[in-house]
Length: 155
Image 1 (cartoon, one colour):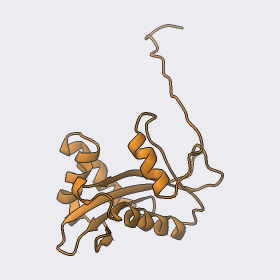
Image 2: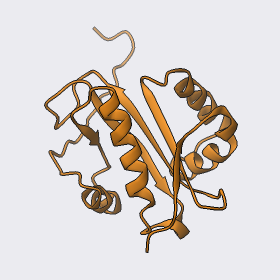
Image 3: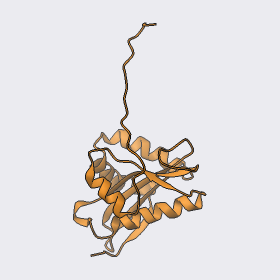
């Protein structure tokens, strides 16, 4: 069942409502989020963030995207729009909110000359994998990242 939505770009006035959704997606201290959110708003050609609202103005979801000029795994072009985060409130899921939010990012990306929209998800996040597939994404590869701490003064 789809709901009637308004999708619009985030503004500084949206910071409190945007923050609530962002913290639901990525639990962290408010100050950490607010600094990053403010810097995103300062670079609208590089970053995009949209809110989905119902007819009463209730915020149902959030999407954040970035324009990447470096190599993005599984893509063939540059720049590439990258879906950095997508969150839909639990009571608004399966109602077309994510579809509307991602469509807004697609339009933003096309306006910036992008031919691809990329994203990622943790290997174990099968819910995200299924959501990406439902939104028209195709899996391109799987990667496991490694790191090794280097002792100070060695070498």
